[in-house]
Length: 153
Image 1 (cartoon, rainbow, N blue to C red):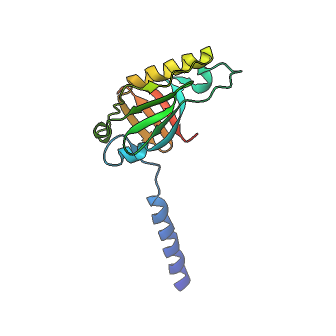
Image 2: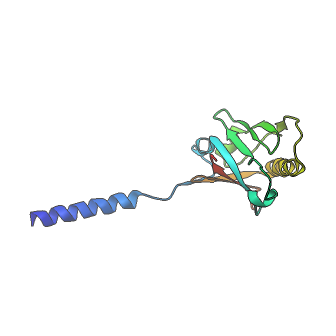
């Protein structure tokens, strides 16, 4: 009987622990919003086009990135040039993604990369809201997904 009780207690504690595990929290505002955005994000798609659909198959294209720091500074790679901007941190805590107009370096690159860069920067300018779901960052205009990123890359 002693062993049966011990076995039942073990099973019960395993059920409680596994019940506490959950999927990563979806964050789109609140006090954890800024922390959830920090770090390096790599472009996965613009609209319904994956990165692979945005560049020629034989191109050695580098994916655009967003690097977001705790002070709201944003930098990254836009397709050919480096970009820099900043986020309104008060807006982030409310679930709004307000990015200042991005500045870039002024280098030229292959036509496909310049086109990708223009699409990327234009899409960033349309973003109004965000959602972090595990290792994915989705940027929207409030209703429609504009871009999606993955953490790191």
